Length: 177
Image (tube, rainbow, N blue to C red):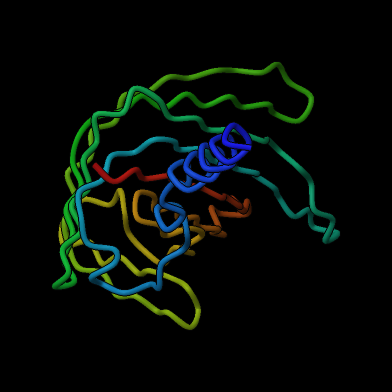
């Protein structure tokens, strides 16, 4: 009987001590104080589609590109007072497949040095960055995730270029340091 009690006590002790902090990965309310902190980029992905409209009104796909970032040395500082700064280099690899042509890959090493202000919209779950200089983070992004250690944003955009249109989506995954 003592052995059974000992085993039960041991199992209960293990069950109670093995519970981790579930709040670490649960979503936080989108507020300046919850967002404030130092971040690095963990992941950056995107896609672009270029189309043209013919004189008859038909939309023609011209090219599709995928963008993947890596080797991040970018630091993002978000302050509770509504200001931010982001700086540092990273590698961006862009694979483009033109309609009817061979795939091309280009590699770029952009360096960002942007600062400005931000405005949160908790109802729409968005953040709008207003850059004072630079343009890496600029415009309105959807806030996909905000936890104790992660901040993921995405942005869809439509940009006319002459008779062509560029439709793009970017997702940036920040990790709190």
